[in-house]
Amino acid sequence: MNEQELAQIQANVNLAIDQLGPLSDVDFGLNRESVEWVEGFIERQRSRTDFDLEQIGVLVGVLGSFLGACIVAATGGSWHRSDDDGWGVLLPDGSTAFPFAKVRKQFRDGVEEGESIAGFYRIAVDFIATGKLREAREGGAGSADRHAT
Image (tube, rainbow, N blue to C red; front, side, top):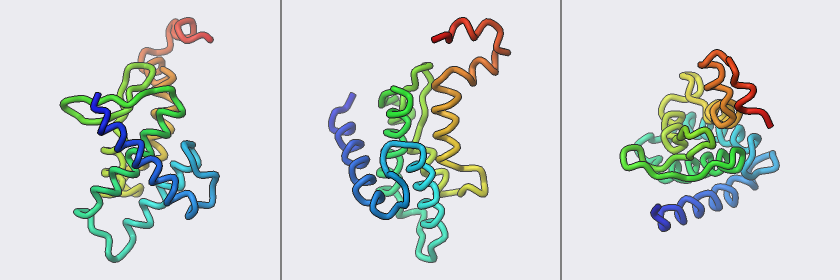
């Protein structure tokens, strides 16, 4: 792993918390409510008359880092770098979520086109990381025994 890139991701997370927390009306941190607030923030940026999709690289980096850190905090996952796909969050079930790509898609297409970072977070945390999505795909046969706590 590239420690310098991981340090930049953490710096981005800190920047998001420091800059967006005071603007929000939630207990801003690595939690679901903050992801939902950031989704609204992205939509508000998209509706600005001076919004330029070509100029959002830094914002995608900051918000993608924040979204990924929220997923790590909720799932116990970890940052993982793939040669093909770049940085993502390796989830406990072995899947990888790509928060930077999702943030960029929401900026590009918006929630009206189905690109929701809050939905992405919910699916990653509540279904993929827990194995519930795999259980549903496999029909649930015997899966309760494999995932008993």
